[in-house]
Image (cartoon, rainbow, N blue to C red; front, side, top):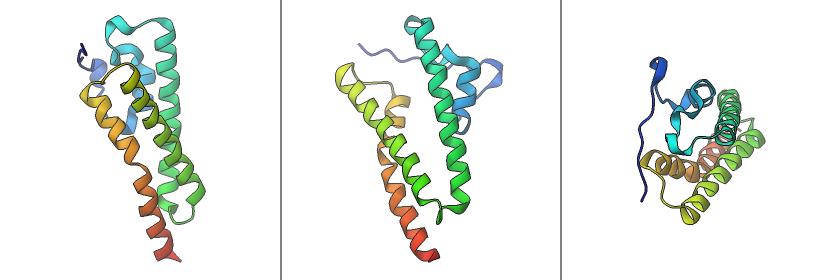
Length: 126
């Protein structure tokens, strides 16, 4: 049976996707159910939080020049989409995640639609 869990908001931190990477570096395992925590899981979780932060920085860099940063934006979209596919694989092999992770997966799988948006902006700027 899948068990839901709440987010520990130590230090007034709010679960905001803009700060996901930094926040998870700070609180780490607080976002995981206690029975799932060990040193390897905590380490991996914090590492992936750094990857999320790096992707967020690249997105914020690319957005103001979205008509020119075609390759960068598409690589970011591909990375996020592949992460969503990993969540699908986890769902199929381990079980359905909670609502937050299911929502994240839906957003990650929808990211390729942003390429259509970017292409329209690029064409209008040309």
